[in-house]
Image (tube, helix red, strand yellow):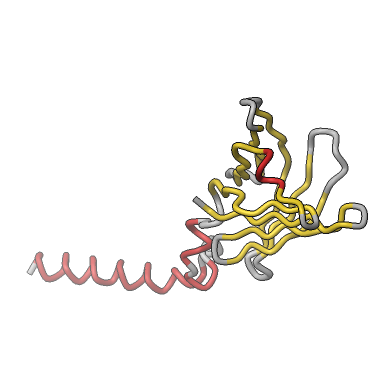
Amino acid sequence: MKKVKLKSSILASICALLTLIPNFTTVKDGDLKEITKPYLGVYECKIAQLGDEDLLKNFSHIHLELKKGGEFVLHYGDKKGNKEQARGKYVYDAKKQTVTLKMTDGNCFQRTFPLQKGQIIVSFPVGNRQLCLIFEQK
């Protein structure tokens, strides 16, 4: 008799917990992407052009890292071995599938770019030419 009462009380507890799950605000609509944050990580620059000029020929690497807590770091190095980095803040908008980057190291730069299918496409005018950078998630 005790086993039946124990099993039924465990079953009742599980049912009660299951009815509470839709009320949790940490998981909206049960979307796994909101929990795992798949946009976090390092993105490698595959294309860097200013107008018709290929900018990648001047760099050994250009990487954009989106970190937890809304911080990004842009790592880049020239062919001579000099390495630099720039830091900033970002905001990811899951509904619009965009990332807004804001430089925090003295530059007044804030722009929003699409982040879709593991790619960030940076495109904006510089003078009378268009700057285009395509970053792919590693």
